[in-house]
Length: 100
Image (tube, rainbow, N blue to C red; front, top):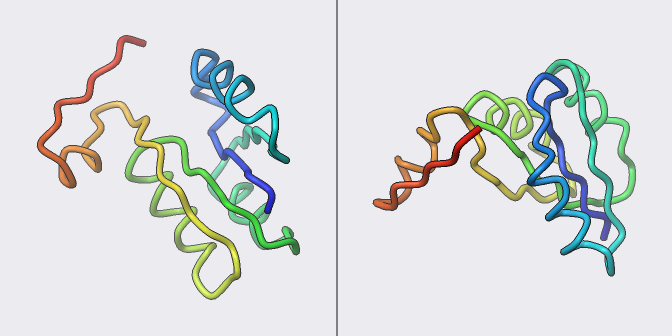
């Protein structure tokens, strides 16, 4: 199974990208930067091989990718990296914060 990390081009997560390369070196993976949700959704629709998509971002990113993944053979992993981390705060009592 291929692992695909989806991120928006407007928010370059170089620290996270470095960790991805380090952890995933034994796996088939890609780090994809897109400029719009429409581009992200098109990429998912064009992906024929069942893949595991990692939504890197906030509520909007998760929602947009999830919409494209419904009724596919793909999987979704959520990496909460939004500005306020509202999604993560809703699911857990943990206070997660980062410095940009």
